[in-house]
Every structure is written in structure tokens, then in C-alpha cells.
Length: 308
Image 1 (cartoon, rainbow, N blue to C red):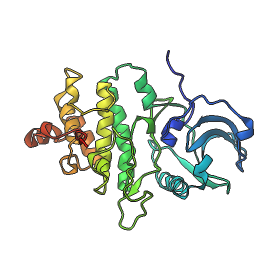
Image 2: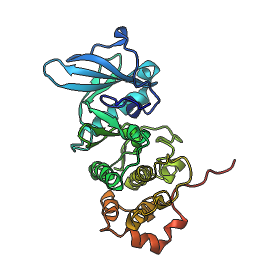
Image 3: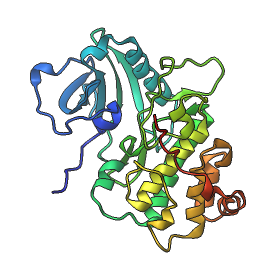
Image 4: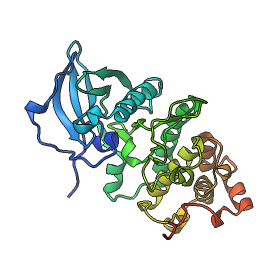
């Protein structure tokens, strides 16, 4: 049975936790948000709830993400949602979900953002329909365009995955969920505790999993390559990654080599920028030559779990 398309921002991607995408509406629980009329609940998560709302002094619809439960009094969670509003609000790009304002209701905090009509990339993958290579490259290119703006701003997303990639009704890609984005600038605050590793296993770069090295834009490039690998192969990245050509015979060599290079265990062996990665996917970069010269097939993908 096919799942229905979610109207608006997927709460699973926004909260990074499992949610009921068709929650029962409880009018008693719907909060009052000055300037907005809450219309419905889009989804609930352990950390919060996402609502569809109408702007009272205008015809537009928006999505409002509010912290709920014990997270309301969690200072770190409140800082993260404020950080997400700040980060996304500073970015202006058609492939990044727009943030309209950060709201502090005293009882909770939240973000008012663009309501995206469509589905997440995860929902697209769950259909089981094979993604055409050209379409996979197009999707990757639009994600890369969004990441390019993020990286130019001195930021790293750190949680790129299909749940955080939206596809609107016109097929355009929208990247969201910057709650754990990290600034590469000296002295920038880290919204994590010592020894805490944030992200999603399967899409995190080796250095992010280790939690030792300071991650930079090359970590996002790794995550983007994992997403593309999944688009091409249809395989969820829960094991050691193998060259995508093993799953898609006939895959162009330059695409296979570009993915392999972007999945290098060492950041220094990956592409320096997302634009270089996209050029290589188009056959105009140096992904194939560099991959062959450095023998990246012998050291890419994900480290095998250590035995305790």
C-alpha cells in the first residue's frame, strides 16, 4: 500500500525523531501563536510538533515548529531551535527552506517557516521505484546548490539525509533542518555537549562518527555522496558501502568514480567543494582520474565497526 504524500514539512525530518505523520488532531493541545491561526497538526515528535498555520493578516500558509514536553525546559534544545532559525534565516536560496521568524511564547519556542507542498526524498525512496540516473544527478545537483550557499556562509549542515531533503509539488529540492549546523568560524558556539556526536548514522562521515576531528564542508560532501549512492542503488546505507556500479551495471564510469572519491574515508581525499563533486558527476571534473591514481577503491565508504 502506497503511503500518502505529506502536505508540508515532514516532522520526521524536522525533529529527527520518529513521528506519526497522520496524528489525531486534539484541539485542546493546539497553542495560540500571535499573528497566526493554527489549522492542523502536521506531525508530532518526541521533541516537538509541527503545525500548518494561516497568517492572520494575509492569505499565506506557513509551517510552525514548536518544542513540546520536557524539551521546552531543555536549554540546549531551545538554543538549537534558535540556532536553526538564525542559520536558515541568514540563507537565501531557492533550494533552502525559508525561515520567516523565531518565536518565543515563554511557554515554548519555535520557528515559522515556509510550508512545502510535496514529500521528502525518503518518501520518494520508499516507493521502491528505481530512480533514473539523470534524475538522481539532478536531485544531487540541487542539493549541492543549497550546500554551496551553506558552505560559502562558513557553515556545515552535519545532518544531510533523505528525511531532511524535501521535494515540492514542482519537483524542486528544498534542504531543511539546520538545527545542528556548525560554524567553521573561530570562536563560534558549539551546541553539543563534550563527547556528544550528533547526526544520523549511515549518513555521517567517518570523522563525524569518531567525534574527534572538527568537521568541515567535506563532511557534508561525504553525506551528499551517501544520499546519491542510495538514489542510484536503492540500498539503505546500513552496511559497508560498495561502488554503486555493482548495483547498477552500465553506470557511467565517471559517475561511479566521482561517488567513490566523495566517499573517501579521509577528508583530504574527497572533493574540496560540492561544485567540484557536481562537475565530476557531469564528466567535466577530475573525479575519475584522481580516484584511479590514488586507488580509492581500497579505502572508501565506511569504517567497519570495531569489535569491543
